[in-house]
Image 1: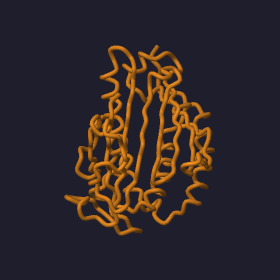
Image 2 (image 1 turned 90 degrees about the vertical axis):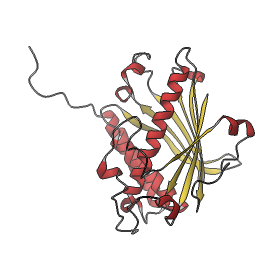
Image 3 (image 1 turned 30 degrees about the vertical axis):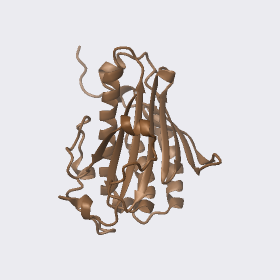
Length: 268
C-alpha cells in the first residue's frame, strides 16, 4: 500500500469550499460523461452513522476508453467499472473506490479534512496514528506555481489558468507569486490517499501510477474550482442539492445516449 498526504491551499473559506466542491463535482461529472461512459449516480442521500451526519453517495464510473491501453489490456471486457462510495460530513469526508473484478485486491481510500484559515502548516490535521505518519509522504499542491500537468497533460487555459483569472463577484485573483502566504480568505484541504493494488509484478508500478493520476486530478479540480468562482459564489447548500438532482438526471441521459457514428469517407 502506498500512502501520501496531499495539501491543497485555496483562496476561499471553508463554507465557500463546501459549496464550490459540490458545484464542480457536478460540472465535471457532466463534462466527462456521454456515449455510455462517465458517471452514474445510484444513491445521493443523507446519512447518520451515530458518529457523523452528512451526505452519502454511491456512484459507478464507466471508464473503458479513459484508461491507458496497457491497463485495458490487462482487464477483461466490462471489468474497468469502478464503484465509488463517499461519506461527506464536511469538514470531514471519506471516499472509497473499488473494482468488482479486482475485489479486495484493489482500493483507493481518500480521507479528507478541511481547515478554515489554514495555509497547510498542520502536521497531523487528520489525527493519524504514528504508524501512518511514518509511512506517508507529504505533498503540497500549489495550483498557481506547480507544472500545468503531471500526467494527463490536459491543461485548459480557459478553465484552469488561476494566474490570470479574476473573479468579478468575489473580487479575488489572479493567483500569482507567493499568493498562498498572503491570500484572504484561505483554507486547506488535507487529503490522505491510500492506494492498494495487489497484482504480482504490477503492484509498485500501478500504485505509483495511480498516485500520479490522483495528484493531477487534485490539481486540475482545484484550478477549475477557483476559476469557476463566479458560477458558485453566493450559492446555498439548498441550491446545490437541487443542482445535484438535475445532474443525476442529465448523467443518466448521457450514459444512455450512444456516441454518434463516425463521419467521413470510409476506406474501401
